Amino acid sequence: MRAQTGGASISQCELCPPGTFCPDPRTAGQPNTAGIPCRASFQCPTGSVMEVICRAGSYCTTQTGEPTPCPAGYFCPEGSHTYSSPQQ
Image: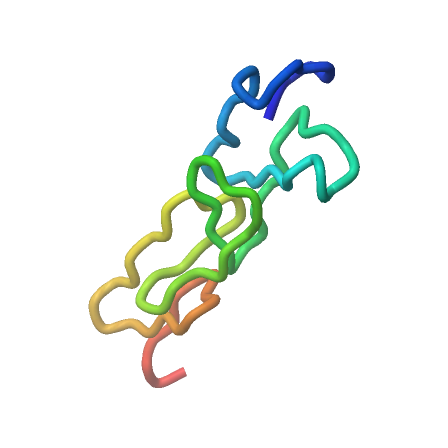
């Protein structure tokens, strides 16, 4: 990611911040001047080039860099954006 277009090399770019992803401009066809916010149910750690489904045992709200562990006694399957009790 680079706040301004026109970088001469990849070394002039910064890693995409956590909670956002920055598709490779060579495949996206446009420069990355700002990260794209990560959707709920996905995680985007620092430097992400795509969203990754939230792992089981945790949940991911919008713009999650690192998933939040599911509280004890609650259920968080893969792709959770919140947690729910096992009875639900």
